[in-house]
Amino acid sequence: MRRHRAPRNAEIAVNHAAAPSQSGAASQPGAPSLPGANAALGMSTLAFTACFAVWTVFSIIGIRIKQDLGLTEAEFGLLAGTPILTGSLIRVPLGIWADQFGGRVVNLAVMLSAALATWLLSYAHTYPQFLLAALGVGLAGGSFSVGVAYVSKFFPKAKQGTALGVFGAGNVGAAVTKFAAPFVMLAFGWQSVAQIWASVLAGLAVIYFLTTRDDPELIERRRTGAKATPALMQLEPLKRLQVWRFALYYFFCFGAFVALSLWLPHYLVAVYHLPLIAAGMLAAAYSIPGSLFRVFGGWLSDRIGARRVMYITFGVSVVCTFLLSYPATTYIVDGIGGPITFRLALGLVPFVILLFTLGFAMSLGKAAVYKHIPVYYPETIGSVGGLVGMIGGLGGFVLPIAFGALNDLTHVWTSCFMLLFLLVAGALAWMHLAIRRMERARTPALRDLPELPEMAGLHPQPAPPQAAE
Image 1 (tube, rainbow, N blue to C red):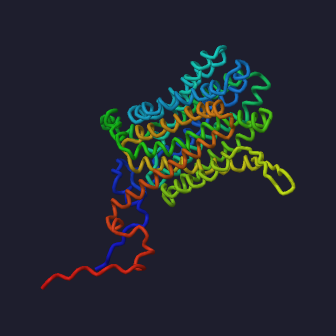
Image 2 (cartoon, rainbow, N blue to C red):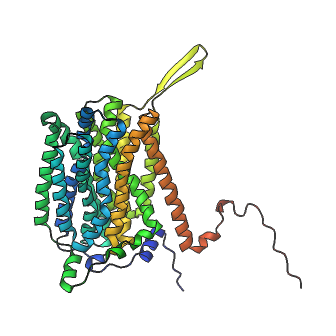
Image 3 (cartoon, rainbow, N blue to C red):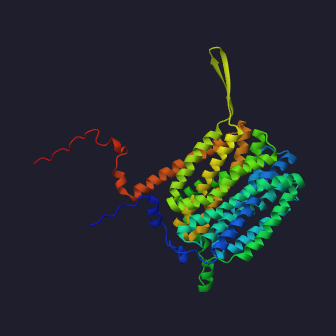
């Protein structure tokens, strides 16, 4: 009788066992993409790029506002992070609404609302007014959870990682802002940046709506008269610890990415004394790979599994954040002929190289996290994806404030990377322990293996006592 071997990739086994089947042709792994898929993916990616450019606009104009208002580091961090707060908290309800009413119409409303708030930003004068306007600008960040719920319904499981990776590449909007906004701001003022960005976003919102179609699940519900999954049922998976573990992964991969996108221009100006335009260009060296390589991360997750990609992400990130966190230090050694003084500091070139590498690793992780969600929770992509996106976005809000507070408390510029090192090291440890526990639960034979199998047999074990006859 032929014996069946256990699958080598435990994640594949868990995915197939845990994930319920989706309805519709696109739910089958080998099924083709549904009609309108390319338009939905392409226009959603373009729309998300514009939204992300607006969402991170304070990374550039915030520097001028900080100078005009005389803000502290913590106040600047709060201003830069406030749009991230709105865009994060709104992701769960927007994801649910996208499942219920269709992502196409919900995304149109989000883009137009964010465009209006960004235009009104140009009329702010006081710090409270800027914070209020920033809350409205943050609506643009909610487009992510809408796009995930909308785009994923056009593609089969085998292609969802790649499709969502392409959509997530809209993060490159942060680089668009860093490249273009400094020139516009220096030529016409920061108010013109807000007005131009708002106009482009409103125009793209209309184009997006006219060139896309409703998702196939919504069309099928309209045809049959079926009702959408109630909001309370969509929130049911949020009780699972696994969802919150995915959220922690995204807190680092995406939240830290957004936080650094906001913080780097200021960091480069202060630490390396670069002009604002040069700082924006070099900050884009982090933002661009952190966005575009997300496509590769989605493709790689489809090929080798999202779990392996997460190990790559966290392993590389631990090394990069450790090196970046080491502060410039001057040493004095008592030598034979007297004191010997030398200095260790990270120059601009190695700093940018490490940032490029960190952005690449984060981009892989962002795609890998969202590869998990349609597989484990196909019926509640909007709510689960919204929660994971919300926690990740909150990282983009909390971390810039923490960076500023650490600077005020420690007076060490690299303290921001020290915090990121602790964060990613903790995420890596939790992931590894959870995976080992999952593998042992699904494969009981693993529990019987010695902790150090290479030591088995080196020390003879006493023979069991013989039973008396």
